[in-house]
Length: 107
Ligand code: SF4
Ligand code: F3S
Image 1: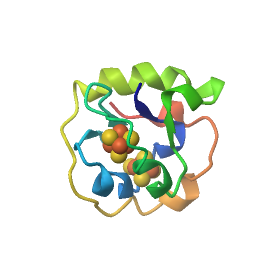
Image 2: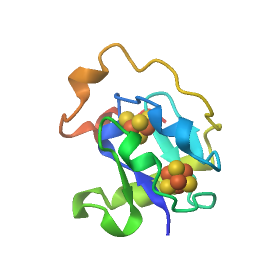
Image 3: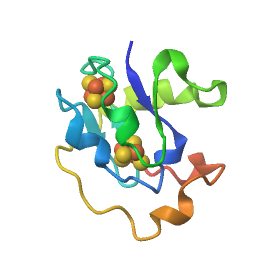
Image 4: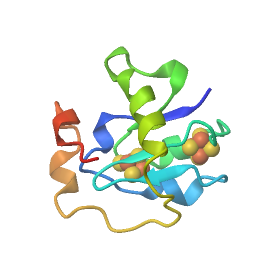
């Protein structure tokens, strides 16, 4: 199993999650983070850290977010590791909870 970053991270990218991961499995893109499914040890620590509620275990994913399993796996191979929290985008709060953010995902 793995944990999965889902749609609400897009353009929020708070990065609190990276500080608690014991195995450094977050990868950073321009406006979204993913979890490397080959590294995640299912510790659950990142879930309560995300202010946007964007992280779920694979088996508790909402049905409409299941495509993010493949998105995390694909982009984890392309993006670099992120180890430290950084400032979120200035307009992060405006995007928190917005619907239809898939189109905003920058690869
Ligand atoms: Fe890292 Fe644990 Fe979250 Fe997996 S569940 S991404 S190992 S903090
Ligand atoms: Fe994204 Fe939440 Fe981490 S918004 S960057 S999954 S803290």
